[in-house]
Image 1 (cartoon, rainbow, N blue to C red):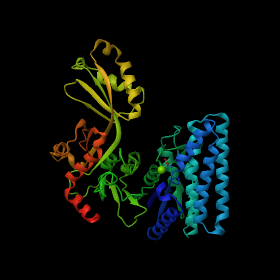
Image 2: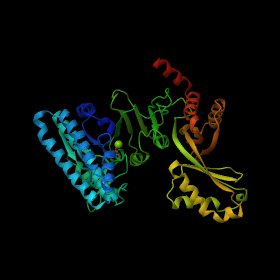
Image 3: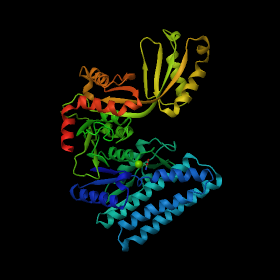
Amino acid sequence: MKILKFGGTSLQNANRVNQTTDIIRQRTENDSKLAVVVSAFAGVTDLLISAAQNAAAGDESYKTIVQTLEDIHLNIAQKSLSVQNQSRALAKIVSSLNDLHDVLHGVFLVRELSARVLDFVMSFGERLSAFIVTEVLKEKGVNAEYLDARQVIKTNDHFGQAAVLWDETNEKIQRLFKNKQKLLVITGFIASTKQNETTTLGRSGSDFTASIFGAALDVEEIQIWTDVDGVMTADPRKVPSAFSIPQITYEEAMELSHFGAQVIHPRTMQPALEKKIPIRIKNTLNPQHPGTVISDQSNNWPWSIRGLTSLDSVALVSVIGSGMIGVTGIAGRVFSALAREKINIILISQASSEHSICFAVLPEYSLQAKNALEKELKLELIERTVNKVIVEDNLSIIAVVGEKMRRTRGIAGKVFSSLGQHGINIVAIAQGSSERNISFVIDRKDLTNALNAIHSEFFKHQAENNREVKK
Ligand code: ASP
Ligand code: MG
């Protein structure tokens, strides 16, 4: 059995829905057993969130957004379904959007939006897309059936990013699939608590839904259909010679998707990894392309690194002071203070001189981090054991990733010398002890140059070939 998941971009308009449902139909002819998971149509979740936020702010424009949502769904359904099959489907869509309107009107009246209500509002996206895709598949002669995943995926009540209750969920999924002949079209992203309140699995959670079903049913493969030819050696928008990687390990894929172009969310891989189920990334717009297989296998890849990824915009916060040398506990207090503020740290670096500790955060947290640290280290700042806390903006992080790096010497040397040759200054460096990832911070204006320099240094021949082919 295989699970096929289609994201918002594979369902962007009637044309894409047609392509996607054709792909599904073809696969049902070749593969005996399949199930499909879908995200909301492109942009719909964001619209639902705006509508809810506007309603809570007392802004009547939520009504216009509901109208836009109705147009998007009716338009796709009208274009994709024949006239005789349309009326029932259209009526269902309108009635569902009326329900949405009522909920939002409630939010508007009480001027309050809880995470619980927001999850319920967001659930309309996947419920509508899965319903429409099911109808289109039926019209194409596929024996399809809609499945609301809230029936089987059980979570805690951490609304917005609920945690799966695995035993119950696995059991419910397995029971449901026993003797199921039809092709189930499953709503991604949504789940429910034991009390049947709607929850969601966090943004981009439909991949996770595919992985939950895949692991529960011990499928032979999970396919994530998106709009790129798999995991690339670098972001092709920044590095034109980047190319698709045929095979990659789970750990490498997690390191690569940590930031930058997220082909797949790291969390998605966990259930698949535990059961060693391969995840294949496929392109809906180029279905012939083999894509990337993520598994525990590493094929014979001729290069010493697997790829590059970057985070375009970060800030570096440094705690500087000559009095910190040899003093224990400062690092601990620095990180506890940040943890209390729930600030996520992306990279940490402390030179062995102990004269400064620096760490990277998203720019929107840099001031909050600075304030928290100045408060925590108030005494040290007065006594001048700590001289100052500074924030540097307009920086980027690049990570060089690869399983092979662990056993290969000279990679760091090659990375940094190629940057040196291009006159690119390195602000901070970190290497995780997994040695699967070397990350460093540079000026944002150098990002594209740095990525291209490293990419052509490590993928010399392939990069040249790609350039030839493109000419
Ligand atoms: N529709 C949800 C979102 O946009 C889930 C997903 O797309 O995977 O976050
Ligand atoms: Mg999405």
